[in-house]
Length: 368
Image (cartoon, rainbow, N blue to C red; front, side):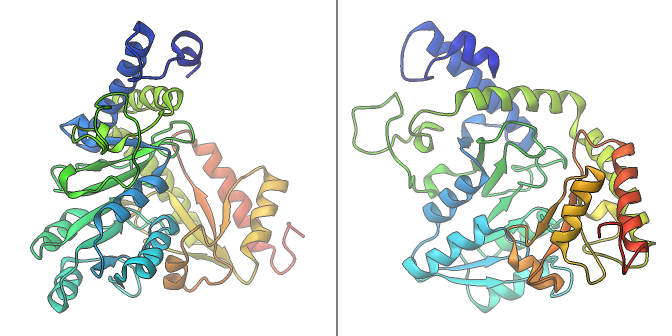
């Protein structure tokens, strides 16, 4: 990013001078690297946005037609639930949540029953829950949805960079990703993959630097969905981080991540007073660990972990009230520890020690 700002500093695609061309090469290199991590053969089908929220909004508003029906999991983030709520008001769409009422997992049978009842245009699913880490069986879900002519939108904000993803092999129609989470890029970058660009309307339009002789967005990819000046320094950073991830290998990252997750789950499961959410089998989840400690407020525990143990967690509803309804954690939510690429075993040991100490010292915890 520093190199881009100091030595390139141009607006890619908007000029013909050498720095603009170099800047364009940096972005296209990032696009190719991201496409490889997502299992996409044609990098032009990967579109960059400011974040996963923008990507999800672009897909939902650009694809769902008036009066249509949309299926969704109980794990959907506000970046999906809020656009759907506005689409209900503006376009009269119908939204139905499907999946196991206890675990939130969607099976092929859930999809078949929902689609046989009434056709659906789209199924929106989060690859892994950002509240309890549960991984959805995506290939089975997609196959069932396509048997009924229902397109699938996959939100990989919690999985891109830590779980192997095969967008084309799984026959995904739309996929949204975040750049600043497990892809290790800077904030302010993200994007989406679209299998068939002709099925998605460009809800954001403007200059592309090329094809400026027409009033509408061009049909070429990715220009069709990338108007305006991009966050080029951010994309330079995303390209560098994704290159490092590719070199290490997502399967290797997943193995390390899973081992640390397993250690936390085992410790928390065996400690009285700690309530865990999501699968206790580390193979069925990512390292997003939602939990509570008896009757204590999650916010109080989060402040205690921060101030007394230098451990930073997220608390509350985590922008996903549907999942909290499922887990029975409304209105206070959960304590969420998120393990990542740079999490070490000693970090996990400290988390376990601190949380166990708080739980064992109830009703007068160390936080008081």
